[in-house]
Length: 273
Ligand code: AMP
Ligand code: FE
Ligand code: FE
Ligand code: ZN
Image (cartoon, rainbow, N blue to C red; front, side):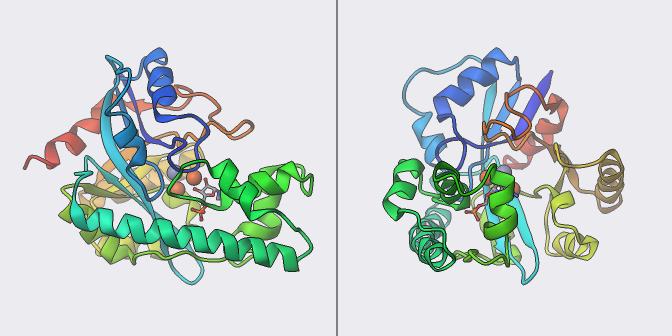
């Protein structure tokens, strides 16, 4: 029995709709799936209507970005109450600032010699509440400025690169508190992408309850060290594919990167404790 506890849809920067993702997850034979779109529950709301799959069991989740001067730290929230008023108020603030930020990035790109249309960014973003860098990257690729999305991020969009603009974010501590207030389990996402062990230990001190040990971009050494870290701090371990459905970005299909379904059980229990 397998699970995938980190999946994006068109509600943020994934390429498949929530219903398409659920159908693919059923075909892949997953027992559990967590949809963890960036800064929005819209994908989970969308799944309340329309065709329902028999399996996998869906765990409501979210992925928040938090900011440090030199690092991006992502925090996942699992088994969370998607009707919780305060978390929904914060999500609205983030969504509206993401829109203004996208416009500021388009202006910056113009000044850097990469003119693109803001209208086209919004068109590609569709009705997502989490307009983001991947949508801007897609327009830059469409215009033929770069050969692949990795190059776009490398040259322009990564944190502290010339076209980067931050959006409104909560601190790590406030993100953890907000997820707990909404009945969820806060988990540190892909620590291997942070690139600084002290940021990880600090986030543990701030009250994170789990570590995303298993992620396609973690080496086997990283996996072993995060397993050890989680065990020594009594934290849950989770994992997922971080599936976006983007061609050329592994995994291209759901089911190509899974974790044992048993990792899901503590996430399900803790909400009822
Ligand atoms: P945003 O939330 O708008 O700041 O954009 C962050 C998203 O951009 C991440 O969730 C990834 O999906 C994507 N991303 C970040 N870095 C890269 C990269 N180097 N290559 C491709 N996609 C990236
Ligand atoms: Fe993403
Ligand atoms: Fe992430
Ligand atoms: Zn993600």
